[in-house]
Image 1 (spheres, protein in one colour):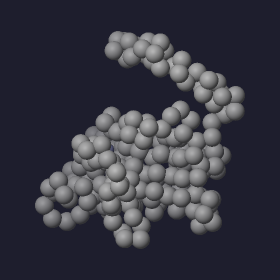
Image 2 (spheres, helix red, strand yellow):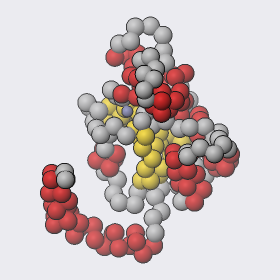
Image 3 (cartoon, protein in one colour):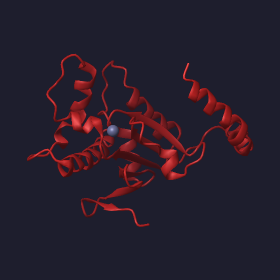
Image 4 (cartoon, helix red, strand yellow):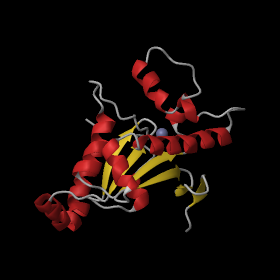
Length: 202
Ligand SMILES: [Zn+2]
């Protein structure tokens, strides 16, 4: 039993929940209507509600290793991320989608490791970002470039979902690429026109 989590839950129930009670009751009564699908890395240091100050009901999350987006496929696999993308964009009608990578991403680092063999699901999953790799020495800068190139790649892949593509093209849904800088608590945002990431103005 993770005692510290149970203790945290008690604190939440006692100190935090009462402030949100009415809001939660409304969300239950009226259902959720999140504005944003947040596709983020599962990394424990990435805490979107903390750094966006979003409250309950605002972000619909899909989190996986690397914040990757699988292509639209019609085979019989269990496509958890794709199902969540469909649900958020077609059923919940979100108006924006954020793909949020981050610095020091283990999934991105692993793109440069040889296939481990004993982790077949991971090895295959990493195929979703292999083309984001860069040439040259594997230093901090190269990893950051890879993280950013992967974010752009995942955004492009969202357009393989026919109905979502239609919504993007007619302006109902907007796509955003974020690179979260863990050690600085800030975000570099993909500027599509300039083709580069720019620091969020403070
Ligand atoms: Zn990560």
